[in-house]
Every structure is written in C-alpha cells, then in structure tokens.
Image 1 (spheres, rainbow, N blue to C red):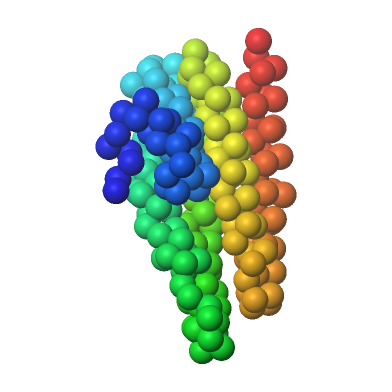
Image 2: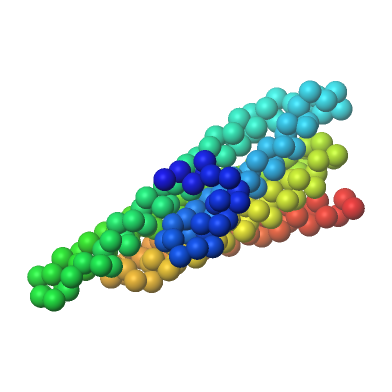
Amino acid sequence: MDFTKNSCAEFVEVLGSKAPVPGGGGAAALVGAIGTALGNMVGSLTVGKKKYAEVEAEMIALKAKCDALQSELLKLVARDAEVFEPLSRAYGLPKDTEEQREYKAKVMEEATLTACSVPMEIMEKCCEAIEVIAVFAEKGSRLAVSDAGCGAACCKAALMSASLNVFINTKSMTNREKAEELNARANAMLDKYCPMADDIFAAVRANF
C-alpha cells in the first residue's frame, strides 16, 4: 500500500495504531522527503531573482537533484512497508522440529537483511539532501534561509530515525560480519552528516 496517497491525518492515524506498517522507516522516509522539499523551496525562491543571477544555474541543477530525491524518498515509504512484510511473516513460521527451526532461521536471516536495505537507502538519500541543503543555505535567497535550516533539521531527524531501523535489524542477524559492515556504514553516515546538518542549522540561526 502506498501510504503517501493518504491524507496527512490518515497517515498519522495509522502510524499511531497497532498496524505493523508504516513504522519508523516509513516515517523517516517521509520526513526526509519533507526536509528535502524545504531545501528545494529555497532554490525555487532563488531562481529568477536578479540578485541571485550568478548562482541561478547552480540552483536549477540542485533543484533537479532535490526533485529526484523527493520522489525517491516518497517511494521508500511504501518500499519500507513491503520489505517488512516477509520479516513479519517469518516470525510466525513453526519451529517444532529441527528442520523447521533451521528453515525459520534461514528465512529470518534473509528477511532481516532485506529489511535493512531500505532504511540504509533512506539514510543515503538524506545524506545527499543535507549536502544540497548546505548549498541552498549558503547561496540561496536570504528571505527563505529559515527553510533551509528547517530542511536540514528534518533530514537529520530522518537520518537518525532510519539508522535505528538498521540497528534493530542488524542486532538479530547471525552473520555478524555482514551486520558489523552495515553498522559501520550507518555509523559513518551519522558521524559525518549529523554534524553537517547541525552546522547548517547554526549558520541559519546566526542570521536572526
């Protein structure tokens, strides 16, 4: 189900219910899309203004990148729900015999690895968005600079939220080498891009 077709009220209602999806991953993807769009707004309000003619070509290119990121993040809302379903089903597999236990363990491991893939991708998209928003905040319209700060804050929140959906899955993986590889990738993104988002916010805050 594509939850992005719901109203905001419907999405929040389902999010707060017992329904297994959408969950933290889907919410992270949506918040990331919103944060990216806020940065994109700065570009939109910069293009066409004589005062910013020197950076117009750069703004147009960055806006195109944001358009793509927004679309990709929205698709990941639904994708996150899709990859969680096999894992949810795997928990219900029988384990009465040794053969059943081995099969369940195999299916669980595969489903858990797949469930990690979407929040990892959400994290990657949020990192790309933060890099773009940094430029919007620096070179975009001063009248809309607060939106760049808001966008950076949203993308940081989405990045952090998605990481928890990676870590909760890697914790239960039996292939510890793969789990630690995923953890290292996630931690590297957090270590680089959370401070970057904080710097954007601080720079924007300094304008007021």
